Image (tube, rainbow, N blue to C red; front, side, top):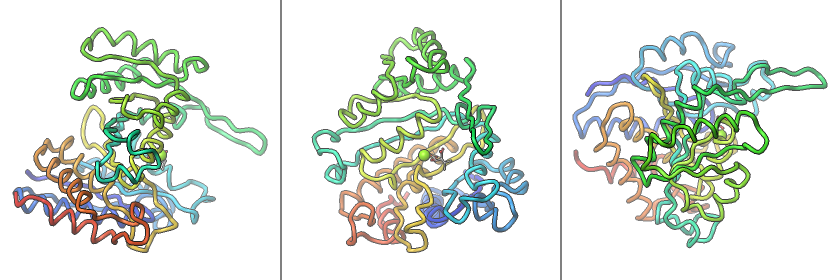
Length: 351
Ligand code: IPM
Ligand code: MG
């Protein structure tokens, strides 16, 4: 197949890992007879420096002609006091693309069981999918404002927004172990009461899925007490942001987590869950696996290349089985970003 992929490397280690993701995509293209062409765009702090805005019009135009968007990370101390922060560029892209369903799988690679801060017997078998609502809630609700003495953010959801993300999660659960936890704060928040009502109303349409409603504070505890009870979790934007970092820690490192952000129509958006990691940027030691696994999700969800996606995922699992680790997982003995990727390339099938 032919596809045009828009690369938005962004800042810090974002650029370092996207480069590795592209090496893996190129290897897949060569081995399986596909042709990926790339266009590059500015976003985040890099775009502020070059064009005075975290999301130049040219980047917005490029979004329109891409088949998929491959994103690194944005932000960093340099821009913490910029009038418009780098993160605003990312939020604008999510909204612009209408990618309301953010899939964040957190899977424990058996080779990394001892790398979790939790006991190996607690984490063994963890395989969950967070379905995070991505274009609503506190991130986008109006009014959003501040002056010297007061600040306001607004959490808003319409029933239609909850309906579409809940359906997404129900369908995801149907393709997995058929357990859905809907996470909310219905004891306090009106938006959560609406959320719970909508999910409850939909449940009879998905009779094969067992639904549990759980408060977000309870869920954050349950995630470390017994992560294996979860299959699919569906939750609003902010709760999903927080719980996905927690899930990342449970399985060993945030450097491992990929994500796909999907909507009703392409292009869809792929990014590792980690940020720009200013403390290690420029050293060539970032873990590229979250980004490489995001490339696998792109092949699966944007291009329906299931076999190729699975080939990447199994190469990653085998590299970890063989003891190849970046420094976030192995400390000083860890290998460089580039060598980690080489280990994946060596383990890809010939096609
Ligand atoms: C994430 C990140 C982003 C978010 C930031 C960088 C805006 O934390 O993708 O989880 O809060 O959504
Ligand atoms: Mg986050």
